[in-house]
Length: 620
Image: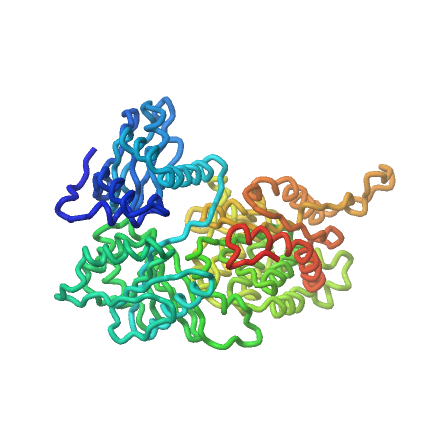
């Protein structure tokens, strides 16, 4: 094992221990005695903390950074990879067992750890009950997350906001006030000497370049004091702040928010690149925050490549056809800071999937802010349209208007079936959707949306979260037989319902810890082509090819529901079995069914959310 020497950094183990949750509730004397027993370990990315099959004689508290753990089977094959972040621990169980463990553990980012000899740590836990309680709580949380797939809120205790210009500084004030209204007592470290104080927020001014009165060790001491009795420390700096000091701050912060506008984002690229040159792994905690005055977020691929995610905060007044999804940007940022990520998985089901719009409307009306959507087939279409910022009622009206069969098809037997086939075969969905979505890409939408499709070349599901938004819909609704596979870059793409009809698992993989799944294919009438189970053979009707394809798709969707939906916390199941799969022109009626069903579940959803965060979502 190789560690960077800690002495040259002059890191005080006492100050470091005070910033870790294991210090909560301990007296100063206890903190100093425990810290005196620790060795400060400063590990650069890739440096080993533990190698598999070696005995574990020490335990580690993770103060800053992130550890990567690879677990192996008896044949040496990697089984899984997991990460431990600041505020966690490593080695507690392994050291207690006293056996070699098949785990490789390395620093994923520049990391600062406190290393304790296991025997000495055991003595300290016996001496200080609160230390033992804190350690067991951290250990139990880790076991619960890994063993039971629990997804508790993880709140970053130290965050940094970098401002590209003074225009975005107001965001810091808004965050501080909102966090305060949620019962937090945040503290602020700022480089703005003229900053107006925020009520009940302790504040210090960071030094300018060349100043000594608040050096790195003093900043660390200040942060340690603040974190001892506050839930959060917020730092704000200009992006032009000294790059070395900015890097030191990024290292110790758990989340970093890079605040830009549509006019100035390009200037952030070289600064962020310099930071990531120091540690590429920092990308995982860098977030771009767009402050927009009615304009669309630029594609900005060069900037997005340097960040893990982004938030879009619209400050303009909403137009009549625009929905609240545009005004929820700040709330999504707050939810992220509070460790709450709400995802909605929208299942496939052809026209019946239009019921999703009613469900989304009810969630919105009840103040439940969706952070991310994943949709399959009709779920991708409704999810992307909603995620684009379109008001639900306006979307319903447009679907009714645009998908109503023309006079010719309305006068044909089973005309809505032939109309749907016509729309597919002549490529009518693309221009219809592009009237509203234009050429926007998924990564430009106000709300992150993932569309699910299937690649017939590899036989695997494909999740889209970037690229042309209309293509994301067209690929996911591309029913085999009704239309040919869509060929793109070595892929032959068809409807995602073939593999994952209700993609709740996609949302969990993206960090959502509360997932609402909406399935419109759990209920199916026992009737096909006017044939029922009790219809005599001689009286049975012959089904058309189109009817057979659509019914086969529905049967498969019903049986595939259990695949992706498993991690969902709650499943909403509108009963739309009385509607034909081709009745898109009845979107208003389908949406109404979705509303009614969602209303029946809304109190349960609020109660479950209150268990995650009763400040954001008080018990009903």
